[in-house]
Image 1: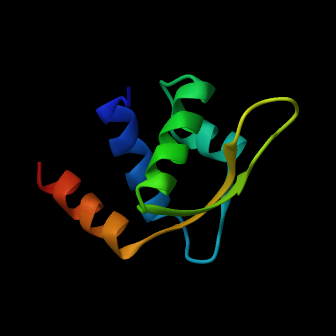
Image 2: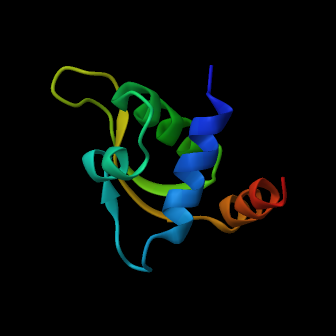
Length: 88
């Protein structure tokens, strides 16, 4: 289950990053604190699957299942989600 606070923090961090800059998972975890790495990774994967993030995904990584390795941008739909988040 996705943690709504983690979704909030990840989306706002990605929205606020400089254009053209990408975050690998370690960089994103250093910015979005207070959550386990696995929780942020799961959140990014689901946000990518739902079409909110543009990200690089791997099918297998060091014996693990599929996951996001780099977050590049938010989509227009992701941008609209950020607007709704900020209104609350």
